[in-house]
Image (tube, rainbow over all chains, first blue to last red; front, top):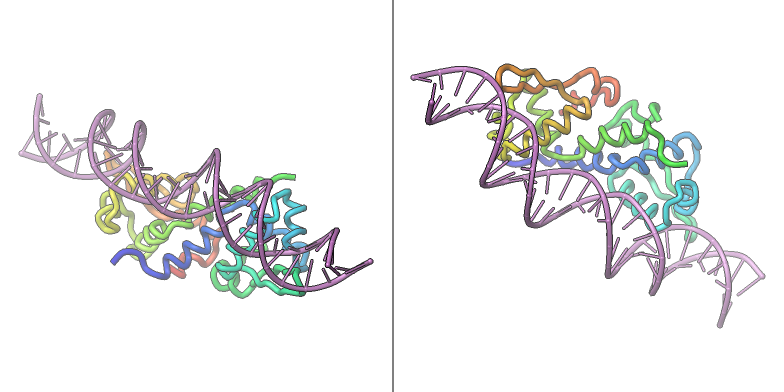
Length: 94
Length: 94
DNA sequence: CCCTTTATTCGATTAACATCGAACTAATAG
DNA sequence: CTATTAGTTCGATGTTAATCGAATAAAGGG
């Protein structure tokens, strides 16, 4: 018995989104319509680089974002497929 | 500047949903197609009544559920309007 | 009136999370 | 090679969250 795997997956996605800074990161990503770097978000949200790196990792692990690496720089973008599947219509509300 | 109010509201809804037991409660509510009580969920999920009462309160405060009281018993149901507005299509995935 | 049932609140505990700065790694530019 | 830039990891800290049992309150039944 206990909790189904499906519930854990959904709850995990929600848990990652349950943080205002991450919502804000998504909004910036969505409206800027371009990729963003860790340092860029760090400066814009006034958070330390380590904290932003932590958020980036959480979102990537939940499948919410893509990461494209060029040299030592990592560019973050929204994984629209996952949003379309699990939270259709959400991105447009940002 | 800091975080927008909108982000806090959205993040709060997500935070409440970021708990497997609450997803499970919603699934039971959705499929049973009837109201549920605290004791009933407590027995079904093998959680203490106080814990379930805590979850019920969190979901109600986030506007995700309705509560109908008859004597000392409180009947929980899904607030479909809120789901339709913020997470259209989510309930049908349960 | 007691006893049972239903739910809430309280205090405590444990676990998880967000955050920072410092140390570290990797890549690039002089 | 050294200095800089980008990001990660680590250790620490304070906060919040989930959970329980016990105590409490409120309603109903015998």
